[in-house]
Image 1 (cartoon, helix red, strand yellow):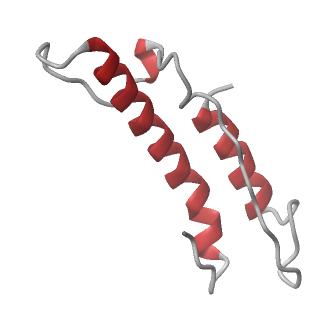
Image 2: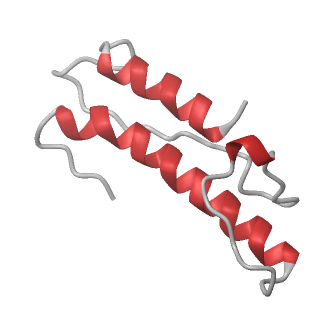
Amino acid sequence: MSDVSFLRQCAEKIATGEVWSDETPVFLQCVTYSGHSPFILPDELKRITFSQKLPEVMEDYITMANFTDYAIGILSIPLKSRGGMRIQ
């Protein structure tokens, strides 16, 4: 499962109140694994491209970090909409 798919599912559970109610504080930790070596993302999931001057391993790492950052953005939407949430 990709980070985007996983964190989108987590976001849906947050938005529907399935994870926790408004009256209860919660510590939420979502662990993803795509940011671990090897950093190979299928071409159809890549969101950025680079010049051929960048070493392949660096390109793969930055591409994966960009993908994971995008997925975290998806997760942050329902958290921010809850009001008063502080995301660090």
